[in-house]
Length: 373
Image (tube, rainbow, N blue to C red; front, side, top):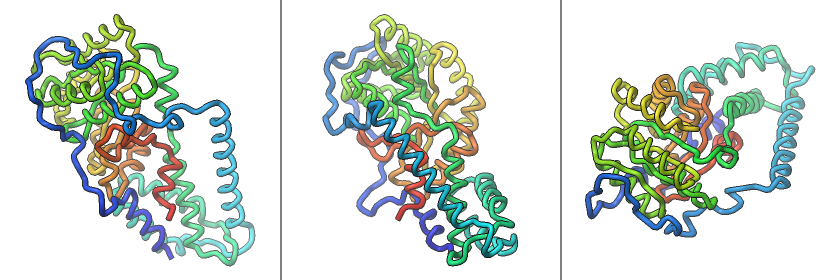
């Protein structure tokens, strides 16, 4: 009776057969090595971003009337869910005994574990379902599996709604220049994620400065340079092995002097257990004084992504999360696990190489992916 829910959980974010997973940070080779110093790589006025790469207007900013309609729609949906639960859980009918839940909850545990959800999160969901149902009665004509599915949806929805974060609204209200620092280990698609955020900001008619503070790898500087050329925005970079915090400082000072809207700071991505790396992150944060620190995690890393986020949060403090390679993730448990374990909001998920392949995360979207046919 629980097969349908189990099947849906196992196929969260399932990749279609026509798609091919490509590492986010794969870029064409650079023709000329980057010189040292602060460099303009493109005309600051124009943008070379294609129309397809720019987010649609309805994705960028909503009017007050539209926001009001969305809020009413959400309230109506919440009332509908509450009514649905009330109708099924009643004072009369079959009483739910703890023993009768064991088989169903075992199926739930297996489904969530196969979806790569962290064990503590699985336990909380199970306990939440058990506590909300034991001793209650459910209407005749419905199966215990149906009642459990509704309870599971409510429990997971509550977890996903923790600290929901609207990046676009936050950025509109932030001071200028808005400094955003990106952290995460190599291979997660951090550099491309920075370019996607830059493209989103540029699409709103704002200006961006990129800071190549990952001086540990010359390739990282080259990659960010290519993105700056494609986007038509300013990049501040020094030579490889230069002081990363000095690059960040120069970028922020340039943005202040030229009245730019945003500074996006790239950082080195060695393993999160590297003490020198964490000290370097702390120094960059002290110097750049970022308004927001975004952790970029690989959704394919599963529970490793949770541990990475936990380590960076303990060392430098992270404010929001961006998950990459969602299009190649056949499980999707990383989003649910991070939302619960780290207690930090997921701002975006990345689902492809192109600059516009970025989705603003929200709990309803995730719930739809989990449970809709």
